[in-house]
Length: 459
Image (cartoon, rainbow, N blue to C red; front, side, top):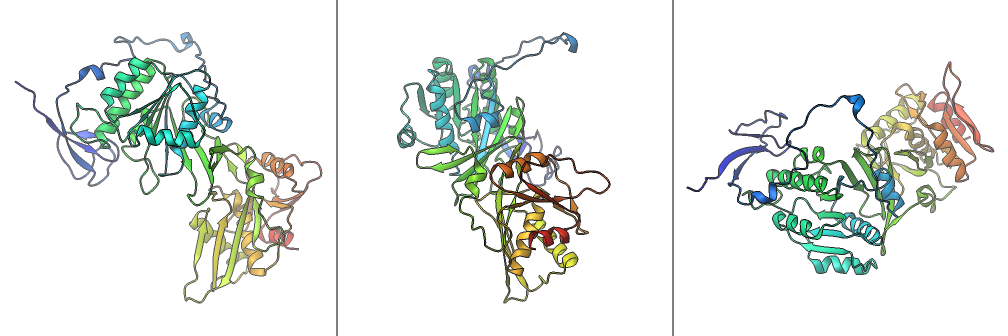
């Protein structure tokens, strides 16, 4: 007698499954997230027989475990290799995500070409584009390789069979939401399919010691689509960020079992593909007007790399009862906080002024070390007085109008000095000497409060 399909309920947020429906997930507490799934009896058990772990595992003393070194595959793409922690780890599973059209497929096909240039075989599985479309992209990028094999299929059963037949040195699946297992009734992209497909591919990659790259879609809110459990199943999670109206892209690592999550890679989207930006600070400041009011230079940290970016502000009298506050590249609530401090502690009249703040280049600044640059740019605009072109601003603004110290001050000052800036305004530590190394030829001004810093900047 044929086995019948069974019904289960899966949470669309965390992937938790249970036999009965309920309005609230008992695992993550999300309301109205339980989705009915009908699971058919498995008809292709051979695709699920991959088990890289032995059946019987015994505990081992910590002192008897030898340190294991991961021999990484060298990448000619320096920016990508930095984010990955120094290269690709054999058997490592990497999940890369980003907005549609941001350049994920372009970056991966370039990486495949770099690996194939050393004679390694690369299997590129596309579930959303045909082989001819990928061929056209590769031709536009000038990629011609006999070691890159394209497979335009969404059936994971066939994908696994082709992996076992070809034995590639690198696997790319674009995207994980497009493939499906025939042994499950839910359509591709469902919670069950995404979880099971990613689990099977991960076990297969680790069993055969093949690096695996998975492409994942994002939701409208910018988070990874599908269950959050997908991030826990992989070794590395990368996000490709950027404004679609700007050419610069940032590759961030939010999880990395084989390296640091503090590294960021900078790329520029051009006709020839994703081009690495070795000196992003110089690029972001290339079109700056040095004598314009409402402009200040901040030095945020992107991972372990300091970047010099221009913060622009425009303050104009509003014609509406409620003034507008527009933030592009900074947190909107941070802008409201700095505006309130300027009005209360500095005495600027901003209640009838529209304030627009923009970070040049499409970058997003999240750390409070750029507060001083934002406050100086707003003050410079409302007073219509330009800031000196050779000064940078470092400091967090407190609610009392005080300036608070920032981390990695030496690296920030060193990057500013390397790009020709001869002056910097930083917070002064009370009771303790400021621990920083003054670059030769660079003047450092210390200010205790925001009022002192603005006076130094606009004198």
